[in-house]
Amino acid sequence: MDSLSVRLRTAYAVSWRTVWLSTNTNTLGIVTCNKQILVEEQSGIYSKGNGLYYRPIGGTIELGEHSQETLVREFQEELGIEITIKSYIKCIENIFKIEENIGHEITQLYLVEFNDPNLYEEEHFKVIEGNKTTYAKWIPVDDFEHGHKILYPNGLTELLKDIT
Image 1 (cartoon, rainbow, N blue to C red):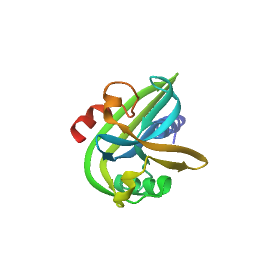
Image 2 (image 1 turned 30 degrees about the horizontal axis):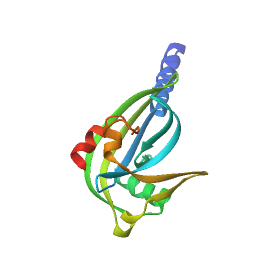
Image 3 (image 1 turned 60 degrees about the vertical axis):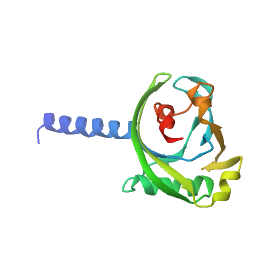
């Protein structure tokens, strides 16, 4: 193989790997109750500023794992809760910028419910991911629709009007 062919194959492999590593494919579970949605509260820099923002429970789809399996696993790992997936909602593609870094997420959204109906009475849930602990809580959908709170991924707030 000549040196040009080697350089082209290397460039292709590096380019493919770069794209693959920079695109995050994940899944999120939408749990609702009384016009509220269960979301994890996060704090930090995000695409629209710095401070508090919210995101439904879910996570990155591992290679060879179906998005529904990911969702069940993430609720179990992060909250210790068993869920049932009720229906597929939609796929959202979200391209965003945080400071000078561009992010790209492809997110599968599902409507889910707790297997234990008593969990709907809880005010908040401890979320454990690795060595990081945050909390998930019920937030009125109106807070996101009126811009009082920030919900990610982009486009989810508009979808909630049809779900809740």
